[in-house]
Length: 84
Image 1: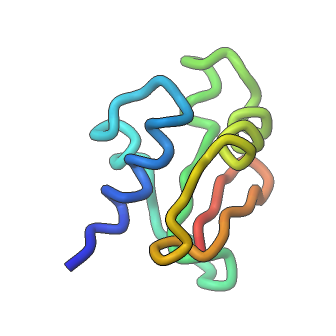
Image 2 (image 1 turned 90 degrees about the horizontal axis):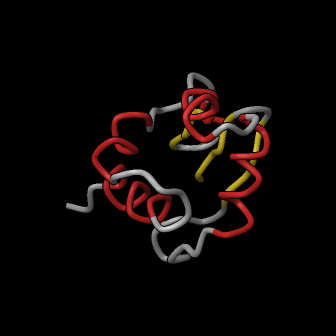
């Protein structure tokens, strides 16, 4: 069975300078399923990366290379990076 959190963490780790294990702990399921299957709240990284959460989310969206067989699309929703 595919570990989606691990897959997402691998994709994000290629864009930002954090370990996959740390990224995986941040990934969560949105409360409203209309907002995707998984979310990566970027506000936790703001202080560490010295950027706004929106900048971080947009940077990830612009640079991430995903496998469309695994992740349908990515979106920025406020300070959260969502994966559908």
